[in-house]
Length: 330
Image 1 (cartoon, rainbow, N blue to C red):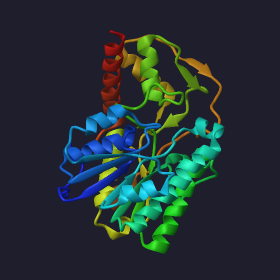
Image 2: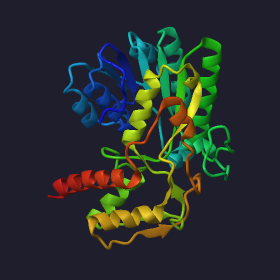
Image 3: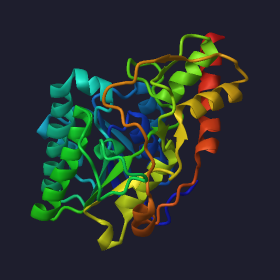
C-alpha cells in the first residue's frame, strides 16, 4: 500500500534500528517504493539478521553493523544521507527498571550522538521514536501531546529526555525534526521469544502451543493498539513533509481507539478457535493503567490517516504468527 505521494527515487534514507520490528518495516517500505539508497544502522542486539536478509533483496540497501553509543559510527551512518528515521532504542519498561544505566546509555547518549551527527552532516529531516510512556501518571483521556504527567519508569524518562534534547537541537542548531509517541505498535515480525516479548505475539504463541499465558493485573487495563503499517506511514510522511509548521513537534501515533487486554486475549482465542485460558498475576511496575490517543495533531499537520484499524491488523498479525508456529512445530 502506498503511504505517500512524493517521489523518493532520488532520496537517501538512514533507518537506525532497521533490523528491528518497526525500523525493518520502514526500511522495507522505502526500498519497495524506489528510494535511491536505504542504509540501516543496527548492532543486532535487539534486531534480527532475518530482517536484514529481507532487505538484502534490494540493490539500494546498505547495512552498517554498529552501535549508536559510538559517535564515529553515527557520523559514518549519516554521511551522504538526506533523511533519518531513528528507531534504534531499548524498549521495555520492566527491563528499564532492572537496567536503568544501560537504558540511559543507549536511549539518551545514543540519541544525542545521532542528533550531533545529523547536525554535522546537514541532514534535511530527522524523525525519531518517542513513546506514549511519557504521559506517565497523567489520568486524562484521550492523551493530548501538550499534557504529560510524571514518568513511571526509566524507559519513560529516556523518551522524555529525547524530546527535550530534540527541542534544544531544533532551537539551537536549526534541525528539522519531529518525534512520534508510539502507542502499542504491533504486527508481523514482532519479537515473540525474548524475555520482554510483546503481548500479542506472546498471547498467540501461548495459545497455539498451549503453554502458560500471563495477564498482568486484572486485564481491564486498556491500550490504543496500533498496527505497524500506521507507524511506517507517519515516519514516511514526517521525513517527506513540506509543511514548515509540522516540524519541531511530537505527535501521537495511534488509532484513537482503545481495547482492554482481556478483550485482546479473547479476540486471539476466538481467531485461533481455542479455549486456552490465561493466568492472571500481579500488575507490572511502571505500567500505565489506561491509554488512548488524540491523533488530531498528526492528522492536521502531517495528513496522517490510519490505514489499518485494530481488528484488521490483529487478524493479519495472528495469521502471520499462526503460520510461523505451525511451520516451526511441524
